[in-house]
Length: 434
Ligand SMILES: [Zn+2]
Image (cartoon, rainbow, N blue to C red; front, top):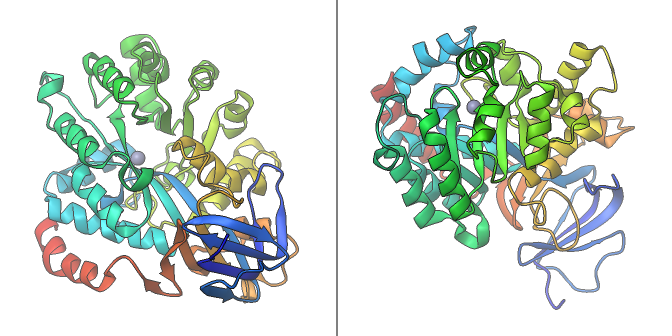
């Protein structure tokens, strides 16, 4: 090693390594986007930049494994409704009017919020994926982007606009910047994408080695209607058509049966748990303990800002823990270590990035969230992991780095022109959509 770009000095590192190690008074050195030094001893080499803050806690950047970033435009637009009424009565009519320029502004707004909240990677499902990929690439964040396919008529697979968009995004962006941008295959749900199309999408995903992203069994109604119509659960139906033949991220999974969990475990799928959204839309409480007992990887997602209202992974972790405890009456049902693993390491696995991020370790990408614990609500600190889950807030994040690049630094958005985003939002987007 003959140079070092950044050295964090005298910080507490919550490594999220499988051994659960927390390193105090530690140095984290970054070169070429990678963590190259992790030790209480300072390196012999003089770094280009040294960052020292007393009471700074550094953890792997959050991996938000279920988002619809452009829906950030719809935050607070429709509240206190059941999912079907909310989606079909309020949300989709506005979305049908969105232009690519609106989607770009919504994506930028969502990514700015993510960067300020310590989120370094997202798994998103939406439309106009090529435009979104450009925005995500420019933002410096990591993104797995899926064109959520919807088809309710008899249009042939190859004639679907969404399939053309998926293919174009894949051609232009899949693997961009050494894999920072990934294009996933994605169908919206079992009931909004016709079964005659599942095998075609699954085959294309397998041929192109794409991952899969889909909502499954979010509501009891959706789950029960599938059983009534097809005689099997959505998970079993989709599995029969090869949808899980590639690594899949299943959003929600609130109403999964034990048999569904076996299927998902067998295929190595991840369930992206979205507790705030599930509670707000009165969808129910996913059975996380059962999922883990069945061997299913579980991660965390915020879902859209229309159904969550704040991208705050601390709140997501806390809510996940509270929901499991209150729904099972077991205080051990989800621990702080479990919740942090879901928000980091497990999320990296769901994105196929487990060898590059989700942990602080030498050789991993320097995807980091830095918290300032010098705050009244974070002092005293007996257990740093418990504070991250139960006491910290997204606003306690002071820096976010992706591959060693600062994307957010103490109030400054370094890769996104937030002033322009807000100007465009007020001047162009809101008058058009609302
Ligand atoms: Zn969703």
